[in-house]
Length: 231
Ligand SMILES: [Ca+2]
Image (tube, rainbow, N blue to C red; front, side):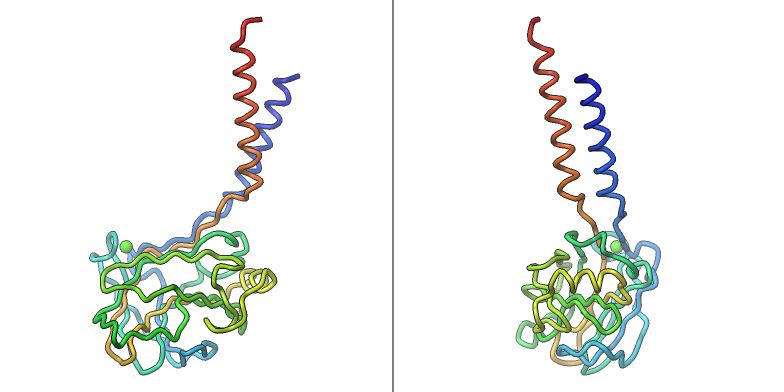
């Protein structure tokens, strides 16, 4: 009987864990080219719904955090962003609670002319936009940026000064992502070149999956402990 319960709990834990990690990470390390990424110029300062122009990024075969990376040079007095390809679109609800991470830098990097009045990450479903701004701008060398996709993690609606994004907002936008953009504009002036590498959207296993796995492991431990005692 114990063996049967043990197998059932282990099987349940395995199935739940597999379901929790079923969503593979979406990644681009720019090792084989620009991966379909381009750049867009937006009005900026919280206005992100119209695209003023679209332009090509430059792929560099080396010089990234590892291997290649892309860069774009500021084209205007507006706010430019890196624009993700279709691999980063669609139904991303499986990544709620997970992270979006990337490495970036900009040069020349002069703190006295740094531009802060824009979101660092924009996730769109049509005209609904989740906006997140990091605590600070990146540096002149590669800077790792981590944002957690969830309520209370600094995401706001429309712009970085909008209302805090709710669970319903995340469901609505992540359910059908039509664009994902990462900021290139960091200087008050048409001077900077910004690099981007290692963009990743990663899911986390659901907590109940881990709880089941731990319960299964605990049961194994209990069984071993009991069978080790003399009869
Ligand atoms: Ca790379």
